Length: 138
Image (cartoon, rainbow, N blue to C red; front, side, top):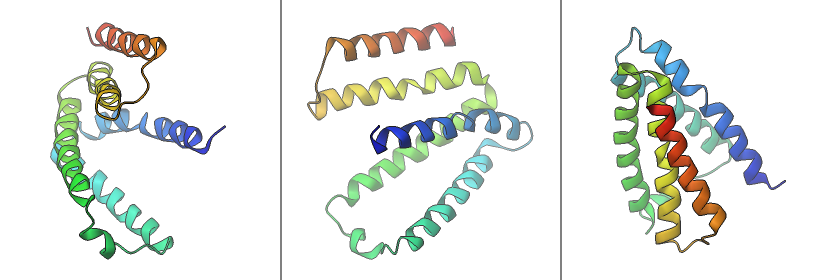
């Protein structure tokens, strides 16, 4: 199996526990503080990985693709602040499926903007994903 498949599986398994843990933590912590603390852990850990790999950040600060990363950082911040707040206010079983629509939208962007291959199977998968999310969050 290709390495990216294993990494994707590991990522989904790890990320699957985020919403339940957040939901428990935010019973007594404000959602904004939860975003700050969880992302501080991520920032520190990623810094350690960058250092361990011997990478330098400087050459990439003015790279032509850096504005895309910065825009993504703004969108990620907005997404996480609103996602955490939604989890603080509502049930995991409804918030997570609605949030999961990003998979559908990202897939559509890949197809439209990057001209990725469209097959009947992909169209069916996207449609069934929307249906599943609608049924789960109703």
